Length: 259
Image (tube, rainbow, N blue to C red; front, side, top):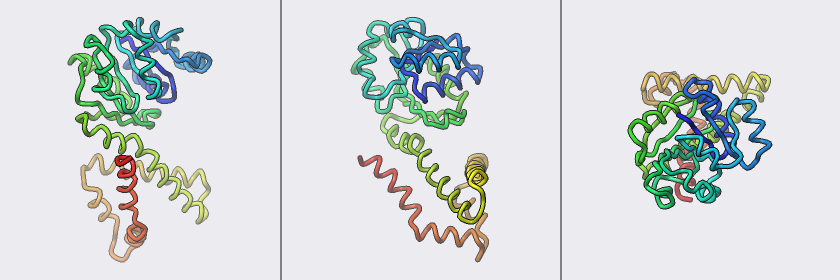
C-alpha cells in the first residue's frame, strides 16, 4: 500500500508512527500533506515519511488516501483534491464524515471507508471502528483492517451505531482519565507520591480491563470476586453507588447522544 495522509495532526502522526513501527508499512510508502508546513516537516523528519507540497501531489503518489484533517476542513480538502482521487481508495478518520456523506461529494470511482479511531492509538492500543457500509474492494478492506489492527483492536459497526460506538471508544478515554486522576488524588491524599499514585492507578485499571477481556466474565462477576462480606471493597462500592457512579457514566453518554 502507498498511503497519503491529508492532514498530519496528532492522530495522523500516531497512526503513521504505528503503521511504520508495526512493520505494516515502510516509511517510504507514506506521504503526507498539511498546510502547516513547518510542523509537517518536523514530523516527517522524525518519522522518515515523505512530504508533499500539495494535497494533489500527495494523492497522486498513493493508491490509498487517508483524510485526517479536521471535520470542518474535509469538504474543502475533497474539492482541492479533485480528480486526483479518481480510482483511489479513501479512508477517513474525520468525525461525522460517514460513507453516505462522502458519497454525496465523490464520484463512484472513489472507494470509501470511514474509520473512527481513539487516542490510545498513540501507544498502539487504539480501538478502531470500521463503518460496515464501505465501497472498498474485499482486498482493500482486508488490507485496511490489517493495517489498523497492527496498532489496536478493530471492530465493525453498522452505520446507525457508529455514533454510540464513537461515544464509547472516542470519548471514553477522557472519562477514564477523570477516574484515573480522581483515584490518584485519593492516593496522594493518603501519602503516596504523585508519580507512584498515577502508576498504581493506571496499572490497576489496565489489569482489571485485561482480566475482563481475557476471561470474558461479566464485570459484575469480577467485582463480586473482590467484594468479601463486610470487607473494604464492598464499602467502597457502596460509597460509589451512593454517589451515583453508574448513573453518571450513563448520563455522560446520554449527553453526547442527545446533543
